[in-house]
Each structure stands twice: as C-alpha cells, then as structure tokens.
Image (cartoon, rainbow, N blue to C red):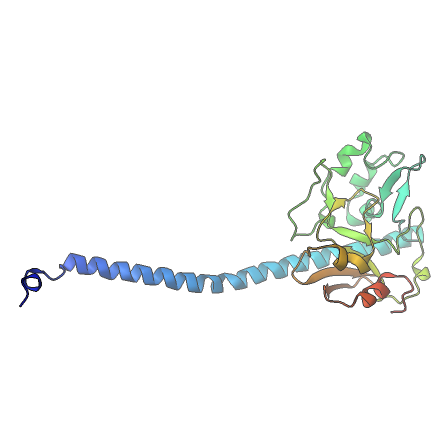
Length: 244
C-alpha cells in the first residue's frame, strides 16, 4: 500500500460539516436565482396592469372634460390660441383645467400673455396629475415647466377655433381625440402639444407600454392599439371624416 494513502487522514467531523453547509448554501443560492425571477414576474405584471389602469382612467377623465367643455361652450377647445400679437398663446390642455378639478390653477393664468411669459411661469410649473402617465418618469422640462404625457389630435383641434362635435362626421367611436406620447414630451401649457395620431408609431421610437399606445376616442372610449396597426386604419381614425 502507498505510504501517501496510509498517511492521508479522513476529513474531520468539522470539515465534513463545513463542506456540507457550503454545498447546501451554494445549492440554495442557485435555486434562488432560478425561482426569484419567477416569483417577481407576477408582481411586475400586477404593477404594469395597475399603471395601465391609471393611464386609461386619466384619458377617460380627459374625454369627460372634453364633453363638459363642449356642453359649456357649445364647441370643443381650440388646439391652440394665439396672443393678440400673434404669438403662441395657450393650449387645449390649459382650456380643460377647470373640468379636471384644476379651476384654481386655471384662474392663476394671465391669458393676455403667452403661456411661457415670465408672468405665467409659476402656474405652468405646476404638475397636473391628469396629464401624467404613471409609467413615465420624466415630468419636468429642462427649463422647469411641467410636462404632459398626452397629445391632442391636430386634425380635430385646430388653431384659434374650436369645432362642434356635430361637425365630426366619422361616428362617435371612430375619431381619435388624444394619444399618449412615448418621448419628446412638451409642457402642458405649450400650444404645440398636438400631433397627427396616424404618425405616432412612425415618428416615435419609444412607447409608454410594450407594444403600443393608449388612444382616447370621441365617445370617451380608451383603447390600446398595437404598434403594428395598419397605418391606413390609424389615418382613418385620426381624421374627423376618415370613413372609419
């Protein structure tokens, strides 16, 4: 028999216990790395569903505000209003404030001056929860103005003039009023807070949610449309008389 084999002592009890617990700990860590993502996935899915629900609610409230504005003024708000000097004045989002429980904020605004005039700086720096998407972190512009994560349909909301709902001849459920943006957010007071909904997927690289965006329709319905939606369908839904 080899002297080396004779002289080699078996592991002591302490060594055996150490090796056992080391192996057990390693196994538990590996198992945890496998199981933990599976346990967290439902939690994240639940959070995503909650954020989507909040987004839908915000757009539904916006839809209700549009109709309340129409009831009061017999027309929808103009997409943008110019000042007496012909400068960009105020946006449709500003016009909706009193119908979104923001009457006090609305009363702080000097409508004889542009939204970004120094005299209007304070009110337009205020965050409006109805204009924020819970899935988006960016809330304030680099120059300090509060952002909106939603944009109006520029084909419906025209500059300096509102239209009556009866002028929209495409059916109550077939015309987009507003859509959530995924990037390039503008201040809610900015009159340029308008877009052509049919071009949103083509011009924006990001979506607030995986696979698409939420759209608000004339009848107050909110629908999630896939980024793979046929552009021709989106174009028809974007125009007040698109045919469908």
